[in-house]
Amino acid sequence: MNDVAAYLSQTDAPADSPHETLDARELPPPQPLKNTLEKLADIDDPVVLVQLNDRRPQHLYPRLDERGYRYETIDDDDVSVTVIWSE
Image (cartoon, rainbow, N blue to C red; front, side, top):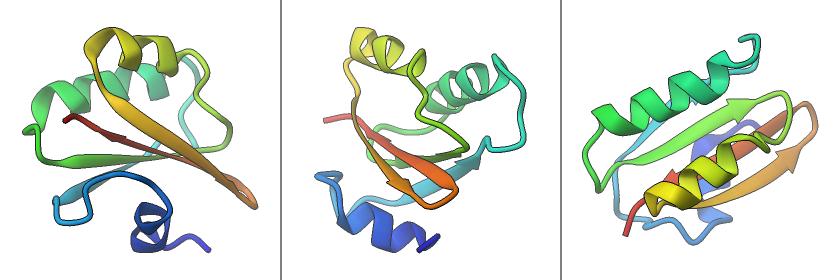
């Protein structure tokens, strides 16, 4: 699929919010985790972050829970897409 809008429509993320994409597929650990948390700290609350990764970001989930974010991950062919937003 590889269409961010299509991924967003499969989640409970606010459809009317702007979104930003972070492609972490080529980054070695722990860069995807670090870059995602830094990006979330830099963007405004209504912005939805879409992280593209080559696997589910298991170590990211507890960090998102601690910070009160909601998220959903969709696996599609060669990409794992995690949509992250705050309420």
